[in-house]
Length: 155
Figure 1 (cartoon, rainbow, N blue to C red):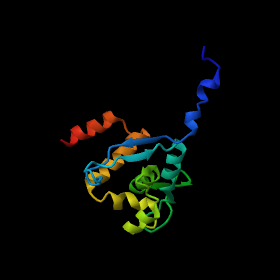
Figure 2 (cartoon, rainbow, N blue to C red):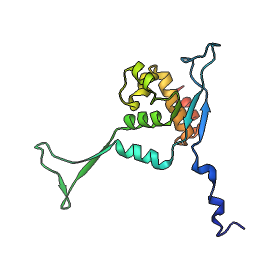
Figure 3 (tube, rainbow, N blue to C red):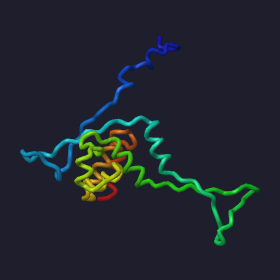
Figure 4 (cartoon, rainbow, N blue to C red):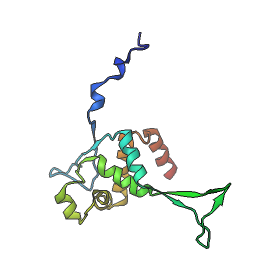
């Protein structure tokens, strides 16, 4: 029986990067006219959290006169979260192909930070939405069922 035996949780494949291939968009086609597939690396939960936390800022809440707001004897803090910036960073880290850290690709699009690449590379809103959705699905941040519900709601 599995009770108490931790060997079932010691899976070597969990220590390796998992890369998933997904269909590409019609914008990027090979010589034969077929969309070039994307390759997306499954990021670890810890890495996703680290990225999200980097796009969170905490600051002291102030009133109209720039004085700290105090409630129950304590200074009140607010937290801002740059969801778009975090999403772009997650996308740039997850994409293996195209490699958004490639120096030539970054130079072509005039980027100095790989986090700028998703919006430069996927200029068309439909392409950006698709690429973002594929990353979210591969990372398990949204279910395919959720995705279908979103599409139904749009129609």
